[in-house]
Image 1 (cartoon, rainbow, N blue to C red):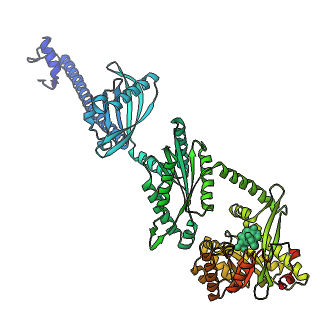
Image 2 (tube, rainbow, N blue to C red):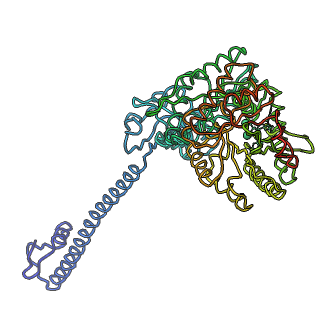
Image 3 (spheres, rainbow, N blue to C red):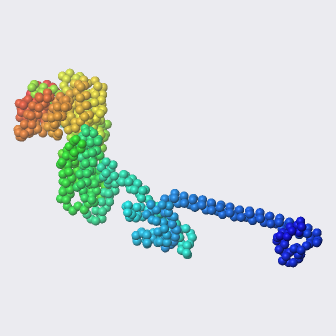
Amino acid sequence: MVLLETITVHRLLEKQLKKFKIIDIETSIDSDILKQVLGLVSEAYRDADADRYLLERSLKISSQELCLMNEAQKESYDCRLKAIIKAIPDLIFLNDEDGNFLEVFLSDDKDFNFVKDKLLRKCYQELFPEKLSTFFKTTIKTALQENRLIVIEYDLKMPEGVMFYEARIMPTGFFVDNKETVMVIARNITEAKTIEAKLHYTATHDDLTQLPNRPSFYKKLKKSIKHCKKNRCSGVLFFLDLDRFKEINDNLGHDIGDKLLIKVAKRLKKITQKKDVLARFGGDEFVLVVENISSHDEIIAIAEKIMHQFTTPFPVKKYQLDITSSMGISIFPQNANTPIHLIKQTDIAMYQAKALGKNNFHFFTEELAEKSYEEFNLEAQLKNALKNEEFHLVYQPQIRLKDKKMIGVEALIRWENKIFGTIPPMKFIPIAEKCGLIELITNWVIEEVCRQIKIWDNQGCEPFAIAINLSRKEIGKMDMFERITNIINQAGIPHHRIEFEMTESALLENISQAFKNIEKLRFSGFMVAIDDFGTGYSSLSNLKNFFFDKLKIDQTFVQEIGFDTGDEVIIKATIALAKSLNLKVIAEGVETQEQHDFLIKYGCDEVQGHFYSYPIKPEYINQTLYKKL
Ligand code: C2E
Ligand code: CA
Ligand code: CA
């Protein structure tokens, strides 16, 4: 830098002046003007220097800032991408059309058992079993050809068990190395699949026994029928209903009932083969389908095996539950080729098994179907019988043996129908019980008896008791007492004029409620008799615990007098038993002098039967008749 007295020549200007040898500034410059010019130019250079410096600085700063900003942005983008990938529980990868892995995004390898790096630059054959890799490759091809998203599901055997996956394959629209590409999003759906499987299980299985439930059974039966039809073989449907299960439920509680059902299901399951279908049809009903049956004997062998399961009691808590079952059997596709028909047939056959004394099995037959068809028609007629006034009552006298006096009558219902003619009560009462008409019929009987009592009273008859039969379906009902007494009270008939007859087995339908009802009936002045004594489930404890007024010896015993000493012994013992319990004894179905005399000899109090009178119309009831005998 040169100082020209007061002027400092700018370094760059000095260099230029030296280079072009315009002035020798080292020596001296005479001209003041030149000095001033040099001073001004140097000044301008310095200004330019300052500007350039400023510019450079600011440029330097902004490029640094730009770098920083860029880095910050990149970092934030990476963070976000990472966050997104982390949030997506999926394995995302880019495949080319040959199934090579070009890019892999995976947040966490735990769901896939893959290490990200191991996938890169590999192809499906190297990673998956052959079948699955072919499946993937063909799906990728289809997705590319049809240019659409395809979703597939697949499973893989993993060390911790089978895992389920879903893969969404979507063409990207760009090429890598001249090959088309797809984006694949794979997701582990094992949990969803497990939940789905659980839901499916719940929807198709019975909660209690874990057997297939009714809807899933229908499906399986349908499939089985189809199979048998196609393969020209036979299948069999067994329909089981537990006998007297309701008693256990009512008397010991639903908890015990439920536990019993579980045990029954277990025993049945044990004797069935893997391909058989055992299901709970509902309540205490079980169904079993066995395919490829080759003979009748084979069916019987299975039926007997099932029945055998009920020969040993079922231990449930402190109880040893002795339960039997009744079973209907039908063969398909011979008898029917739809589930509904088959069920109906086995149901009919099962009811037949019950009617024949329970603890039994019965095959479906056409005759049974006809019988049930008749029942169906009877039921339809029965529904209108009350409205059409098709019922009437007949009365059968009951005679006191010591003085041959008629002390009462039993009201017996009769039904005259315009299509079926006279239908005996033994035939229509069970139908009325089944279809829920029995209470209306009993109500009608009671109203009719009350009306008749008034007629007899008005005729000046000496008062006698009228026995009314109650059905097994109503004795254990909660509202039974109120329902009956309302009718009788409304008619203004004194309670002691009416006696209710009920069979012992009827009491067992709901023993605790039956007990309460009988107590209430007797407490309010009605008489109660136990009907058909000696048949069914005669048990001393019932006689002791329930309070009855009268015991009716069943006619099947009476009719054996003179023929069967065993039955005679039973009659003698029953009379003695009744006396010891302070009960009156009446024998029904007395037809002959011999029966009559036998009953007198052994101390029977009363009799009822054709020997004295058939059941007759009320206008023929004549008290004086019997005194003469
Ligand atoms: P049940 O209560 O045992 O009635 C006695 C049955 O024996 C009556 O049959 C009667 O006609 C019949 N019988 C009477 N004496 C003799 C005889 O000497 N020999 C023979 N072989 N039979 C005799 P019915 O009237 O056909 O009634 C049958 C069953 O129907 C009754 O048996 C009873 O369980 C039921 N029933 C009848 N009327 C009614 C009713 O109004 N309500 C209900 N719930 N059931 C009724
Ligand atoms: Ca009776
Ligand atoms: Ca009877």
